[in-house]
Length: 433
Ligand code: URA
Image (cartoon, rainbow, N blue to C red; front, side, top):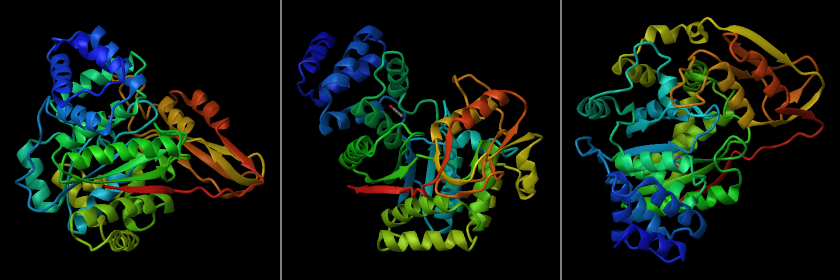
């Protein structure tokens, strides 16, 4: 076969075989297929789509382009979760110690933030001494010992995806369902867990702007996971407004601790409990999701998993005493407060723009090489549906001068106070295999 024939075949909307897809992925990763032909192939996929089988073969070929982590040394069912990315999404920071406290084995590889979305690894780096890179054996030993570990993704996980994603980024082929689904799943499948819960964000601050698109992506990812022999559940959760109140790396660690103490925001507590409920079910720790959900929610509210968080931080070299003095997590930032100029209800709180505002302050990267400021960010005092009186605090900005004016301008046009009390649906749907 030749790449030209395969581009032609996809251009006509025909289905490619496993061998053909492997030929393309391997050829591109090893440099036999040049960027211009791969771009053409990706554009053909963009317009003609792929079946669930083709998407699975693509995910598996991308998985096999690099290391596939062997977690068999870890005793019990290994669980993992993945978020498609959002604003204020600190679910993993709460969920890892919670799941571990309740008896699950969570061996998680996480990413860094890019654009308006944050990344768990950056957040963890705001804890002095915390090591986000561990030798594989130490990573597995830690999960066996305390039940959880979170590390950065190793360099050789799905290199085909790295190369293809960079090409998609510059050829307008990112927003293709089969390409997104296989990209995400290739990395998840390479990370070695037996069961995966996908938190698919939907709304202004998410990759998927509509429930219909989020549903299509979720179904495809669940199918890919199942065909690869994994237990997979996808949950569609709202990213219409940021999750919780705090956005920014150290501020999100602080909110994770508050949630583990039992005093977290209701939306964050709910999403963590739902995702953990499914993980516990997949791990066989509870009989069904409802039991897992209730156990997770109650454990959070009683603050029982907090010591596990400190154990996790200590195990990865982080300074627990620093965390226990919460004012450390504000760093040496300055404060600017935005007040309500009218009364009513908060009707809109645009997640995308709040994420971008945090980015302008330095909390996120606009390009991969940007250096971030771990201590700047935003604290939202009101959420959608809350009553607001003129003069109430809406947002506090924690800043180091950089980007302050731009962030204020963005925020000023990103919330609406009006007469309607709006109810946001937090959990849109659950898709099981
Ligand atoms: N995240 C990924 O990992 N891949 C995509 O294609 C899109 C989002």
